[in-house]
Image (cartoon, rainbow over all chains, first blue to last red):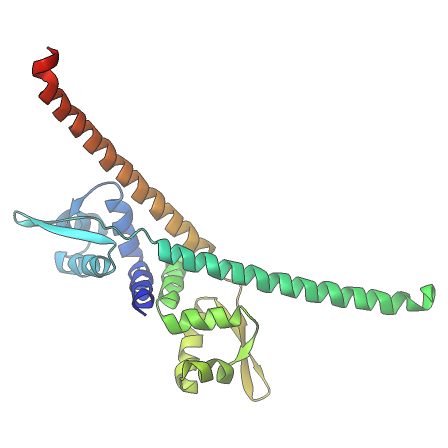
Length: 120
Length: 120
């Protein structure tokens, strides 16, 4: 249950292009809220809200340094999100294999019906 | 921009454990809204809303069959979501490599300082 809630928070945090850009920026090194807000053309208040969502999901860690708040990548490596997507893709491919087997079977049955007169 | 919006919709669709369970269930085969609602202990209206979110993200396709609505997995394979997470994990590891290099450098510098008296 806790893991499901953590996964909810992770995916929700990633469901916004501004937040994904913040993570990409912090991948290059730490930055203050002001440094993050400027290139995004965003107010400090708006940026703080996005950073808070990322912090709640464990994707970002912030620290008060003097008058500014420094942000850096957190410990969340997205392993659970990756595992879930991998699980889904396997399901998806298995479903496709099932469909393929079904159509192959049907094609063979049709071929057999068509050639029945000739072979027997 | 369109791709960013699609990625927003994908991650938002995945940010709910009920919706993830619907996808896992549909991986086993198609199901009606009623069949999806029952095990989740959910009203048909509630289930329809979740299915709509998944349909908007391309993860589910629905079709009216008689009086019921049949649901099956859509064409969205989560490739873009997977690519984004892979990109992030590389960033994350590079950041860690950077930190490791920094601490190794600092440790070596400290060792050099400590042993300076002995070696020179």
